[in-house]
Structure formats: C-alpha cells, structure tokens
Image 1 (spheres, rainbow, N blue to C red):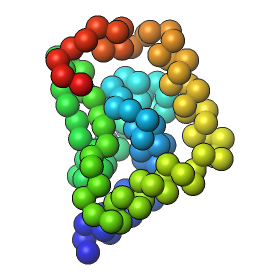
Image 2 (tube, one colour):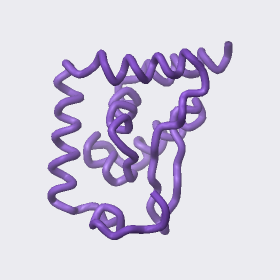
Image 3 (cartoon, helix red, strand yellow):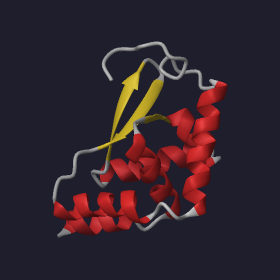
Length: 124
C-alpha cells in the first residue's frame, strides 16, 4: 500500500504532473525540462528525484547529460494514473503551452546535448 500512496503523492504536485505529461510523449533531457518548465536546474532535479523515488521515471546519463523517461507501470494503479494523465488532461491550457514551448525549444536547437542536435549517441 505504501507504493500506491507514494504514486498518489507524486501525482499531487502541479510541476510533477507537467513533467509526467511531457514524458508521456518521449524521454527528455534535463535542459529541455528546465526550458519548458522555466525552472532552475535545482528545482527540476528535485522533482525528478521525487518521481524517480516514486518509481515513475528512470534516468540515463550520456556524457554530462541526464535523460529521463517514464518507467513501465509496475501495477494497475500506476498504469491507470498514466492512462488518466494521457487521456484526461488534454484540455488544460498549461499543458498545451508546455508542449508548444518544447516544440519551439527543439526548433531553436539550443540544448547543448548531442541528442538535441540530432547526433546519435549510444542506444536510445
């Protein structure tokens, strides 16, 4: 039951919901999350640590960059929460702005990571 409680606590924060919504589309570099959320690295890292401890995200390092992606659901509650986030939150303007900001950021190509510039680095 503690695992389920941890999941609900992770979903109870607006910033973490925004992060999870972005990660539903694909894995992201910390710099992409910082730009979209318009938060400093320390804040984003704190939220990512919370999500990782809750079992919702994995991280992977490539050189100096850290990429985050969603974990496979570990139980029915985890799967249902992600499904709800994917299907029930599309009408929220803030989430639409986040997606638009990510697209704009990717078009500028301002992230310093090799992956953001189109270079293939290791396994995806």
